[in-house]
Amino acid sequence: MSRFSGKTVGIITKVEMRKTSNRVVYWLWFGILLIVSAVCVLPPLWLFVSSFKSIPEFFAQVPTLLPKHFDWHKFFETWKIMNFQRFYLRSLEMAAGDIAFSLVLNSMFGYALSQLKPKGAKFLTALLLWTVLLPNTLSIVPVYANIVRFPLFHFSLTDTFLLMWLMSGANAFFVLSFKSFFDSIPAAYSEAAMLDGANKLQIFTRIIAPMSRPVYFVIAIFTLTNSWSNFFWPYLVLTKEELQTVMIRLYTMTPNSTATMGLAIDQQLMGIVYAILPPVVIFFFLQKYIMRGGLTLGGIKG
Image 1 (cartoon, rainbow, N blue to C red):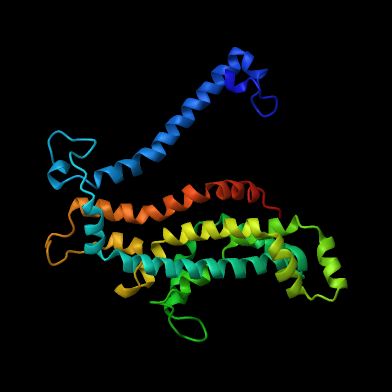
Image 2: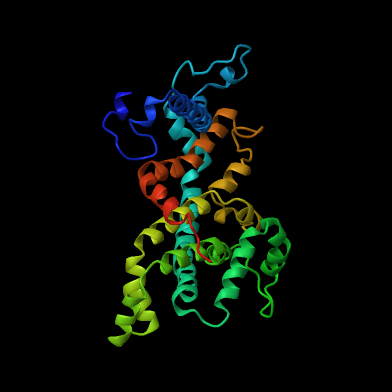
């Protein structure tokens, strides 16, 4: 166990690994994590490889794991056939608004609960915690009723990204995450700024927000991944084809002029590859910040 020879701190050190029982537990957990990793990695890897197979290979009596020939032109041809650049732009447009609304509105609400503490702040915090515990299915009918006919003003929020942006700006978990991080900032900074004549908004924008860059960055990543994979509400309210996102395009792969029976199976798999590629790239480059965010947001104070 040379890897533990110079390790003196942590859960497992050189001293613990001298015991046979500890070594058994270590390799047992290592095997479990290896199996879990395989379960997570192999399906998207198989999907990517299989998207390059020819149609006869999918229906062969003897299935093959790898395609006989990698036709890389299929990657670009399918993109052109499905006109995926338009759906990418719509998904990015929706995600940009989701991030902006999420960071601004949720952080300001969290700041009010953490630093301003108006009357009823504890009740609002408890109410937010309670809403997090409720199933999302309970709110589908009343929310949709308000979407179709907004109360008092009687206008519709269908066929617009504004609905998704407002939902991102009213996320109870994000509000509590911001509040938890703001609670860890010493009140001395705000008090010193107030003595210098700064108002509440200036304290938030010039002191609290700059000191909270880690939580802003993590919430932005979470919002981006959630927005990209969001299917239910966009599919329900975006009826116009020019507003449809990537996830809706995957669900509505309709026949075209050259394939009366719909898109071929290899093209459908390639479309799924297009859809999962951005989240994979985001996780690959930003996994360090995502892991830090899990530690930062792991404990939410009441």
